[in-house]
Image (cartoon, rainbow, N blue to C red; front, side):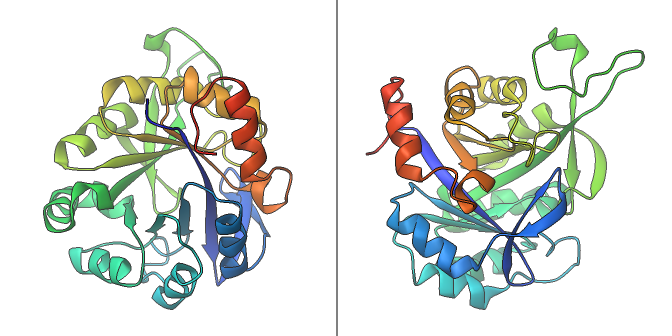
Length: 267
């Protein structure tokens, strides 16, 4: 059995790690290089660095910061934000990243997934999916729970969660795999920053449809939330930000408690 992964996430804006709730009301959460060093010390399985305003502001990712972080960590390192071309992927990998996360550009130009996978290997191409529940007529579907499948749907948002689309998230997950993605980073916009738990149903639906690893993102507040995402949600990894940045949990503690629940993790 492959070990499940625990991954801290650095959402970076204007050179600082930030954390918000449902993609707004961001608060400062420290220096990205210092945070990265701490998570490397805690032996996180991986680290994700996302320049959260690069696509929205139509600018390139800050490669110098990527290099400085890469110099401090010895664990797999994924970088995303503002990735638009194969050359962008090349520059990020040259700067020290192991993988690139693509969201907006992947949807606007799906061939970028294939070209990136062919050039650098599918293991380097992570497609990020920011998904939001769409309320149906006469029914409030804003909660995070279970409901009959025909009553739930999720739509993809782009540009750092600022622009809605009509693309079905479940379909897009399957399509991203077909195009060559090696991994999916699935974030529930409804749950992001709430610490109320992941959108388990979204994770389960996607995980059952694809054969590549799914990283759960958005809503982690307790070890039990992570356990549910890895078991009921069938995710391969859990990503979190707030609970790590503000030292509510360490990576080690998360892993020890997951192991006590029977989850295979790297200790």
